[in-house]
View 1 (cartoon, one colour):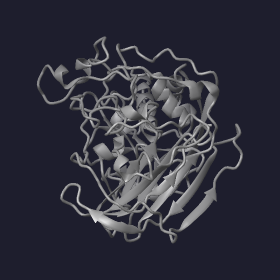
View 2 (view 1 turned 135 degrees about the vertical axis):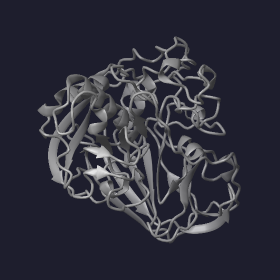
View 3 (view 1 turned 90 degrees about the vertical axis):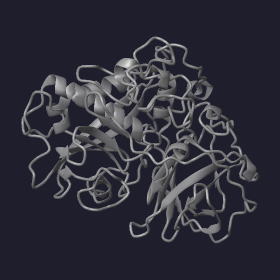
View 4 (view 1 turned 45 degrees about the horizontal axis):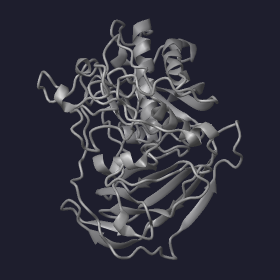
Length: 457
């Protein structure tokens, strides 16, 4: 979710040890509160087609996966088919009630023993907020542990379900965001294959072009403006780089960009990049308190002058995925930091061409996270765990054995080989970047996930 400047990026993740959850009761209580809100009724070219429903999860039991006690809910049904090809789940808890929370997907809601860990749960447990989605990949058996097969490209749905797990469920809320855009024939018939080379999956061509609305928000405050000129034309080079990446044949998504400026005192400089709290000056606070400047049918991009927690952070996504169409959560958007992209210019000046190209790469990368893409390989390299890489088959990975300087991470220059196991450095979703080095490669399966996102139409 965070892409660091020049050569180094480290991710702060909470890891869940391998565990198996067993419980007997899989019934759904009658008193679960369900509210159905239709955000878009028509599946047309005018905007995203989504339905949103919220529940208050009711605990029915407890378990201890890693020494911490989690209360779990009943299994809630999930529908996936080619007229509802993707579902997102957004979990939220009160700031005053700290503790872990996460979903645990099931293949068959009538048989809890078929439970599996999805990519997000295998790598990260949220505190107060967590996002998940299904599917994370075309071949779900490659994306889960233990491997299962789930299809979203057929007419009818399997009896899928999900339960919810909280250390303290008081005040917890779960929101489902469902895409209701019917898959096109080539999207339904799309097949993947394992990456055997660094160029696998790059030359696919989708029959139709999709659209994504982008709402750029320049954040101004007591520390000055985010950027001296706050128009689309002022960062045209960066936006063109982003547009070029998403226009590739393996993606074919057209960006429709709008721009606004907002005086958001306390958020023009971010000192806490966490999305777990809504405190002023935190990233979660920025996303949570700005629903009045956001657009529900767009990817909301906050352009902020700088962050001071780490220094050098180029951008952050609110989630993988971020909550599509939902404003006011602590994960509702992405942010890019202008001054971290300055290589030659001074703060307050217009960025140079090369600086804007780097900004365009960051926008592409963080938008990829928000729409559901993970790093092709995490910083420590691929050792075979589901947590080490993205859940896609056709993306090249970089094995941990490529760490030839033994610094504990796979650097960019260690992941530029030609095979499917020593490359990925040129991919848009590689974990780190370098000045003057473009990373615009996007595979067909990455494009498939981007095109399925509820915000894309």
